[in-house]
Length: 397
Image (cartoon, rainbow, N blue to C red; front, side):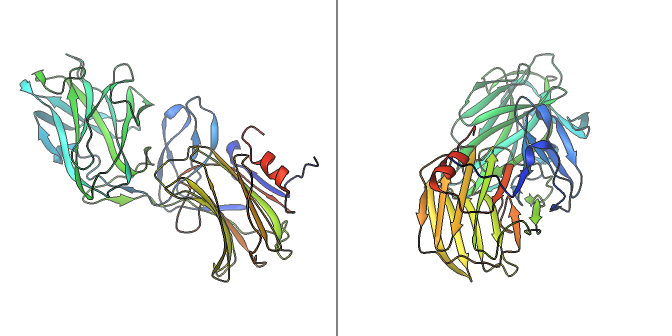
């Protein structure tokens, strides 16, 4: 087998954004950095994503994802059930003020309750909060209860030991340092309505117990976002609010034979979230009427979409629900082929392919985004054969 080297390649897992690629984001991002520690990302600076062992996965490309709960930090304005809120009494994992949620004395079912979150039937949502132990006169655990239509039982988090006591399905705890954990649970909405979110104290897995009037937990931030994993944080006050998107752009295609109408493009992404619709890249002309794009829909079908002059020429599909995707599209003359994670190729032999591409959008198409880690993007100057496509798109190659 004769291997082919790419004519242009970007390895985003080296924490150095190539000067050929520009980034536009007009606000500061709060991101989970190495080993889960919260870091502040400056305007127009790339955010990077790491695995649980601190290994850099790539650039964290997110779109304008809404934080649907509000207010996200002022827990004193939530409905208080058998609790008192001491506003800005403590310090969160990022050095910003955090609220202390103190249980009442006597027979209690303590929680802070918010009923503002609007959800849509059939969609997945991730509910999360950054929480640490407060007064430990009696050590309390954390309870999350979702009211209708987002409900389906309780989740109990052991903040002292960093483990989930009950309700582990689609839930997790991300250590943030200084005793804080980002505790989250994903649920699929059963109908379209506003759902109640209850973050409360518990005695082990007991929602109701006898309180002592002093034991507490510290709440720094909260979020509700589409998908099954916490999105980058966006502060809200009186309404849901969206993050500024990460708009990357490559405009120098001089190494590619665009006019020749042939080539191959490989994209590698990690930490993909089921329930969202990631866009891996789009190569397009100035007008945006001609492009090649790879995306995945909510049914976990990966698409290679080819449009020329505003007319769809090919929509090739391969189903793959993996959290890590390596997709490779090859095109020449009227032939377009796709391989995903080493799969057999899917092809279309009738496509008319544009020859006026001028730019590439890594991790998006200008409207929709990857919402995951972009690890690699590579371009080959030739159309690869099916055997090479399956080898190059295979994990661990």
